[in-house]
Image (cartoon, rainbow, N blue to C red; front, top):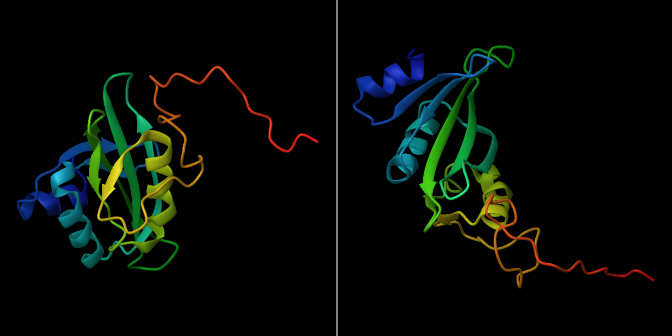
Length: 158
């Protein structure tokens, strides 16, 4: 089933895959990493000026990584928001997705956390560095194939 935004993207020859609707009736689209930045700019211009959240997940051990964006358009009032979910999949070997920081500034810490936990590099992000783990940490703790170190350091335990 195709939603309003998917139909609009098809009409304007913008490549995507419609993944249908989630349990809340929110339209979900899959966008290729190479097309994501230009489609994000188009969405912003089209009225989707509020990025509600961004998160990432490991699809399967050894498989793809996904970056998920929930963007909202409030055209007819706050009681009638129009939301869309965008999923951008990337291979785990060299996971790279264009940053949308320059479109929605609120994605700053969310993309940094995604980088820190799963290792997705967001191209053109102005401050992409670890935000939760120490800079010396090796690996990406939320990947399904992550092997935890055999030590636990107790800090300030006095």
